[in-house]
Length: 325
Length: 103
Image (cartoon, rainbow over all chains, first blue to last red; front, side):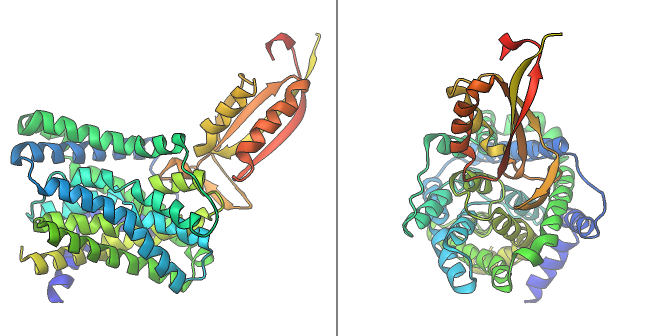
């Protein structure tokens, strides 16, 4: 317990999390502080490129082993399966309609790449290494949850089909293309390639992450302001319970595969996090009847801040306890 | 100056639906339109602003078409298929244009 508290305190007092808290506080205080849309997009492009490239370079230097395929498969299963757990939990804990519950469930199978990036930064700060290919696992986990959400709706008698255009938008959305593209460049150019651009993508990384999380804090803070009108107690509790359940499923998969401590933490974080970019966009197209303020507020206003502040230290401690790392 | 009657159709719709809408109205023979960003607003689905949106899912755009009056029904039929279940507003106003052959 003392270990968790000390890790949580260290995490809370890091520049990255304090920047996030600054953003949340500014939004809650209704300050006019804002990060321009184009700047926020530029920061996210930088972070996705850097994290993808570093993952690829790490795979190039450490090589690929059998756990890669197993971890990708586990990511697919977790992304497709977690919405089933989330959906049933929502049915028990809230009075949400079937449509809203299915839409929310889809978000919890998919991932938040920002939470993943923040977790890699925490691991780096603690000197815990992880498998470079976890970046590819993150990309694989974006989409299956959306199919699960649509399947959950169809079991209730409402047929929702994924058309070709939507599938293409999901699989080729800018974040996935950039992440995988940078990963491939990292694999091809290896440590030498990384060394040649490290002054751009390694040294400034944490500073850029601070600014990006300041912006995410502002967005999450605005989401939190809406919580009272949109979410009941059951939904708020779900937003903090589901990540823990997801992380335990991720930990179990990591143990089965034999991932390193860092890899286990990242698979836990991926399973615990909820999407707020890819899945909301897909839900607006495929499931317009679902209320966007419910799933966006839950994912951005509750689960994202929970994972950043409490979740990540908890997952690191659990993974270290169980894997002995 | 000689002017000609035309219809101005403004469709305010979620940004994520923009391409679906323009593909559909192009199929209906309307190939001239402008797309404008919407900075924010408030309506049945609550207030929102473009500032601080993390994805395109929450943004809105306006698709503005100016067409000859006889093509209005085709355009509205096509647009309705796309906007029916989504957040958005469709308005039609009478306008006058200078060069009728362009519409």
